[in-house]
Image (cartoon, rainbow, N blue to C red; front, side):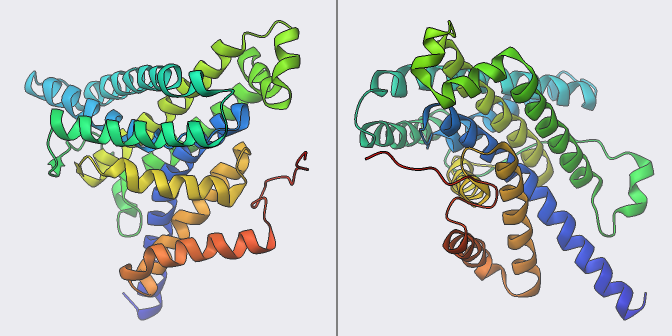
Length: 307
């Protein structure tokens, strides 16, 4: 292999790695932006729902592996259980931690969100373990994809494609379905939406559940790719996904997806060409620079604040 081919292969390796992590950031960023777009709240417990989804997936996959199920069946059932369980957590969190505080000062739900995040982390530490645990490799590696493994792992390609598919389906749901129209109505004017007969409480609960579904979906994919999880994965990924949502424009579906991809690619290239020690520095530097010149984010719209 010539030197130029090696350089190109290394570049493509970093690019595919950036798209993979960016896809996961985007999935979680969509959860943040959905909740913020509907009720103007930052759900700081969202990363912990991601983490809980990964642990539920580990339990289900472990049981099915012992029973010697086919890998595709294990992946499908694990994703299904993790997403349902995470949706139930999202529903419960909204009812317990946020609904009673909807009319409270903005600081109250923020503190409640942080408290719920800490509670879920400590709960998993007590129920599971504070150590890293192995996660089974659930994503199959089709033979026809092995030819590109020098610069793109088959698991990475499947993560990118499946994440992109989910994002497109979410966009269709928001734009074309009654649930999506209800979400957009509440986002624009909650009182008017109530007068028009929209069930605001139900729609808000569905928003939390939908965001939690996306978080669990991403958690299973990336855990199966990396091969290990622990109680702290939700905090780290949650902070970066929130950063991605702000980077793209909080409240914008397309912005959340774009922000996640930009953040993932920035981290990957910074790690590959400079140093892994500066991965987070470059990621947050990009955020600062973009917000200096575009305070509303890449695709966000500036709004006038009433005083």
